[in-house]
Image (cartoon, rainbow, N blue to C red; front, side, top):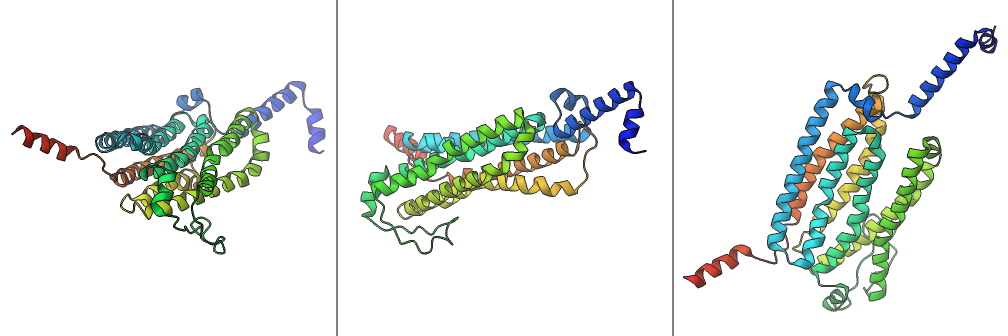
Length: 328
């Protein structure tokens, strides 16, 4: 007697109970992230410790941010102050997103999108900051007197060897600006659609998510390439501003919050963690990844604090000394 014959010989009550149980199991297999109630009702010692550590790391990151902003306000004029504060503010926001992911696992995709948005926003802001270091795009063209710029910079250094050097003009700088500004609009639209699909129809999301990846990758490559070219241009006239270090700190957002996240998400599948739903393997895996991101964001924030020590436009200490001498 096969399985179908066994099914039809069962009592109606048994059929209904098996169907209901199968539906519940299918729902749990799709909804790998527990609700808030399920999460806190089944809290484990590991998750409690993770929440405590994540909270401390987030507070530490915010403290570093506050210290950095205090110094920027004392040493920068208004044209540079706004973009600089926005750049150093990316990392505490990422820390808060990682903390929220640990506190509310079901919100992981929204929080992951917030991390991604920080790079999309940081790109145009950083480009604006670069040209404010030299006044404006027009001032840069005048200051460099039409000096040619190489295009073979990462991440397109290998495939752009045949491209000739380009003399910056108003039109070419406009193209460079569009290459950076397309990131928030293009990737923002894609991430919005992916969030709607994930929380409305997760099966459809899993079917179409791979079709969005090439568009996101191409958008990131174009934006980073334009930023690298701009950094190389401004470094020639402002070489003491640690521009490459600042650019590296921005790129770490993509490398740590996107590439590392995807790599570890697959690698940790080989390690058995957690138990049955609701505190399952996925919850443990994402908790570990986000704790790692929080630790890295603290280190990156310290690097950012060092990178944005220059330029110093307002020497507060020297001004105070001059005032004291005048009074004497």
